[in-house]
Image 1 (cartoon, rainbow, N blue to C red):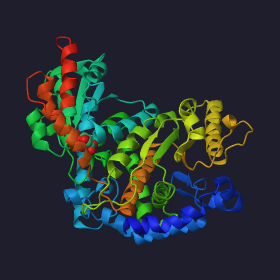
Image 2: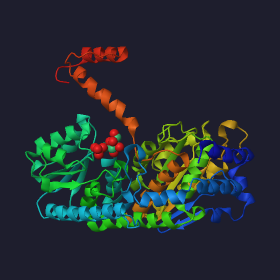
Image 3: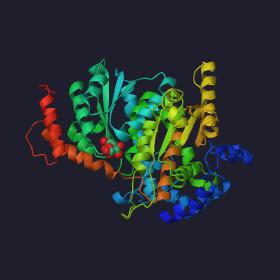
Image 4: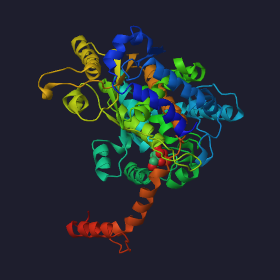
Length: 509
Ligand code: F6P
């Protein structure tokens, strides 16, 4: 589908709805609050506070047909080489569900099942040792997914291991992480699909030296020879594959830290939650398909309403890392402006994604959401049943969640303009019955599939990330200059900055 077709078919609806108010759309359509909603397994979504009416929704659903979204999902699950710039499939779904019939998918599934079994055996051996702490060394997709899930679920487990995450190349991260740990009772897992990532190799070197040998050094990588050359024993290396993108990889052996923190049974429950959404996304028609509806509302906000950012606001402290996780998933996947043929995408693509946990965020940036000049569409995420007994706190949390979505949508008139709330700010409300491994897996899979659907609608590749390479290359070229090795630096600003750093540097820094 062409960019003109997409924007052209939404434009008349955008014009028609230019002056429309969400509150009026709700008032004029008595069934809207319950009918623009959907329940799938442990997830409930309500889209009735998006600034869209049923005719515009019809236009969006026709776009889903034009873009052949159901067929695109079939191609994903069958392992077609949809990551065209790297000429490979994106088969993260094979890590958790068995829904594709192609040889490619079956082979991937068999590899995943085998790797999970090896991971379980390795963790059992670790559990039988006197190791108490595990340090996950990785960055981007080799950090954010496991970190999110461990943070969200760890309190519900007695936890055989304390799990730590070391990610930043800033040495203070290593210093902070290792403080208080005993090298004799700590294991490290170096997680890197490429095993060529600067941050992970530098931090891995710190860990290898600190541990005093490779006995408790583990790795996950698609590049086993490099991991071995680094000094990790082949028996302690778990496989990863080029058919899994880093930001889609928490379901693979990249989830080692998750399984260490919550146990293999709950790791498998996480996979089962994602598999439930996989089955739904593959079978449900666009009008009842949670991921497709979520993606269509994102496209409406971006391309019809022209909104440049998107907020994610989990009303659950355990999901505080969700915005950071989604920043990589959404912005690395959709941060593209050309199609796989190299043509301009011809429309606005990725929104800047940001957010934070409620209610804390209400006392921080919500002022701008309510009265700022930019309209920011938001996903609010709530959990119906808490895992604690503080009922008054939970009632307050839920009432704040509901109040904010209502206030943003309906606004409030006041004589004093400084005290008026313009309202008409769109949001989607996602509710989980409870935060469990199953529901968390479902929630993450929902976002993965929404991102893929958006990429299909926009005609861009969700599975490559060429935009991160240039900075890495220049950093490599500048490293000798920063170390004072007297190399030529061509850029005059960088030269001046290097001079400034050199002049201020204390010895040893
Ligand atoms: O630089 C970006 C990136 O390639 C991400 O896509 C990836 O998740 C991260 O770096 C880490 O890569 P690796 O797992 O190969 O160390």
